Length: 392
Image (cartoon, rainbow, N blue to C red; front, side, top):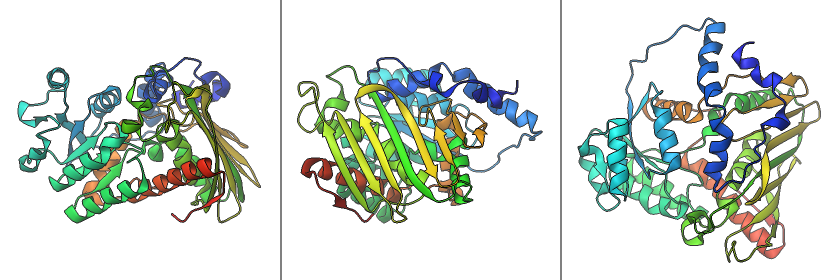
């Protein structure tokens, strides 16, 4: 069996995780850990089956420092071992023991190690091109602006900030400093996702009528930062919900013009004021297409996108986990190559920064501000019970 045909023999419903997760990243990690072998081997097998010759890259290498050495930072660092156009060269952390550990694990020199108080000094370090900010949401704004003022390109995890106003300030600061601001939209490079976008653009699905995005898991530790509004900026919507918001846009291929939303909270002890437990939200698009989405910290087995058109449909299930992504359309299973998302993302970011490459779906700060405007509108709609008109 060819590696890239594995998904065709693996029922989509059996890929759903049934574990109680402590965080979105634990959730995604548990989806991905069992598929690690699938992520690494199939790409080579796929290339071999297609007689794709290996190409040696001799262009500039994007030298990256990671800020925030948590579980996702480690995932990015491990994935970057396989990059050909990007390299981990520095770290920024408030925990000295983590810095020491990362120095040992990734061969990072002492001169490229910083803490949150002194990292402005990267301005004088010519060995760092960009800083990848992987810290709690509410910290992104100030940290990205400091990175920009230090003259380094900024890469920021999503959501880029806690509201659109702060997001726009980040975009403006990077433009003023003459540096790039990119956001960790790894799904914008994922092969199954891109194939559905290709099909939609080619009108193989006909006129798009409906999108459904289901994103959720049961969150654990009530003391974690994701349940602290001061650090997260909200609840599930500021975490797992960003996938449905962004996914609705790139799957339908339009930006919404109105939003409605409803919040459900059954545990006000765990989910305090300003920390949403479950939000259902709806989008309306200029073409007449509609979307119905769910973001929750209270339900497992939710990682599914469904796109419906007059001439066909497309489904991803899992749709945003670390891998493997699985999909099908009215024509049958999707058999695109399985990739390590963060490896591809970082190499593609190097192409964007150094060569001005334009991805199929943008990953810049302006793209992220659009998502933040929609999240702002979702919260407003849930609070007021009214339809909110949006222009993003």
